[in-house]
Length: 387
Image (cartoon, rainbow, N blue to C red; front, top):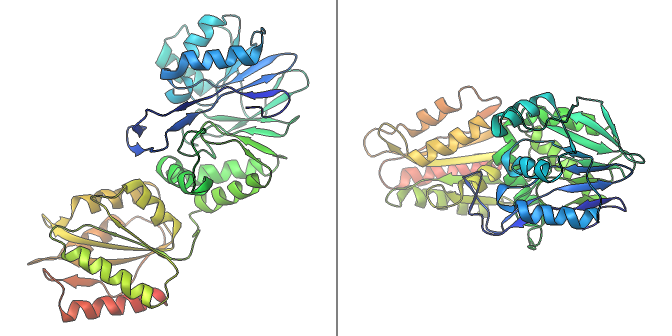
């Protein structure tokens, strides 16, 4: 892949990975992106996952066409991007490694104190002069590791964005859902906790003329795509509501709480709710439900009482939301308890320190199975939710 006359893509696609970061299902695989800038001096932008070192080095050799790299720019030290630093330096010992001070500390933790004897520490505003191309470094701490820098090439107006603007999926596999869906699941799963830090980076990026974004995961973004993905990141990182509609997340032991969740869905659709996403937290992909909880402005949690708490999958789900700074949302509750319903109280306690959470009344309480009274409560809740 050619990014511009002087910038070449040298990344790899992983079709064998089952879980990204040990937890995210990636049915379309994963891309580990790397780039090389060919100028009077040559800069390589990051490496790839450890399983693809040989392929990556072969891609680099082909792009170099007999030249040798002068620099390896390490924007992010997570191993899916940095695992081949030692192999690169073994092959190109004269190359200088360029990274932030924090990145070199982490590099030594992975590779030992003698890694990268030729090194250049860079910080916000520093420039690496390759000749025609000037690489300007922009600090991006906690997007989503503390050492991250991103890099702007003012000549070709390219932002090398590290893990920002990435998505799940290999680049050679067509994604019929487009960029947004798997980029949203990626963002809220991996970066979602760090909204203020992403906002800070977006403010810096607003001062740059960016025509192309080269992330470390997912497709290269050009033209009108750039404005779209920046807008999405602004919404996501400010915890804004992206789409009209709501998400229902439920757990059910014997099917009665599931019946209540489905009844509420039907009542909402009869009342013209534009979108109702519904998920069984024990069976459906939980990160996708986390994504939906952030996408919409209203969340309904339906769960059984379990050990005087809420059902374990529900507790885990709410903890995922809270640790990602879930905020500025309406939350409605349906609880089921045969003798001592406690799920609603438990969930409210889990959200106690969350900003801008408004609980919708009524709280629906089911005693074992739906009856005339609890069905009426669900109808009243549907009325409240569509207002």
